[in-house]
Image (cartoon, rainbow, N blue to C red; front, top):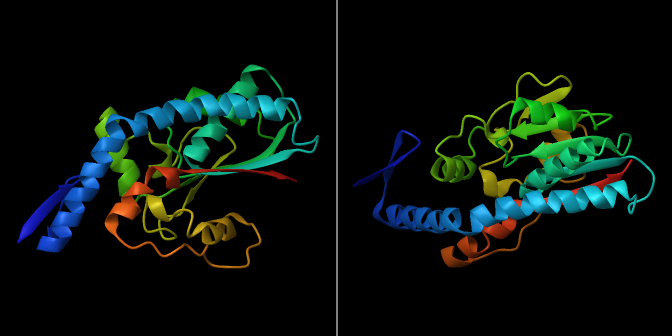
Length: 219
């Protein structure tokens, strides 16, 4: 009989489950040491590129709706921050950040809110243990991670709890239709079909790739 402690909670694991769980944590440890930190930095840089694309109106002159989860949400946030710094208003209509990999001050949230004309939504899940683990291990805190909690004190920012819609960070894409439906979008399916992947190695090999999604919709 084996027990594993995660975020102060002990879980009873079978021998097989214990081996799998240990392998997952080992993979996450590797992500924290290198790809995860790099991905956070690159998402921030990509945000400035996205801001330039939007400011130059390469996507047309209509207001833009931005939707992103995980690192995609981080890209969008830093794009908004750059747009705010350049005082380019009227470009972005609505913004939906899902499971955002962000730990920023209330001041920065307010700055990004100033360039969003319509809805500004932070969708979070309290059961996102992957995001919890990555930020706790890399920065020692999860108290300000937008993807895990509501953001308070930002006028006009909506906080939407999607804990009951997902099974964890890796399922955002699969259950995106359910989340979009909750946010008011018309959807035609309850989930996105995923290819069947056999073997834990293949699943873990795609772990960091599944973090990125960023979409732009003309409204």
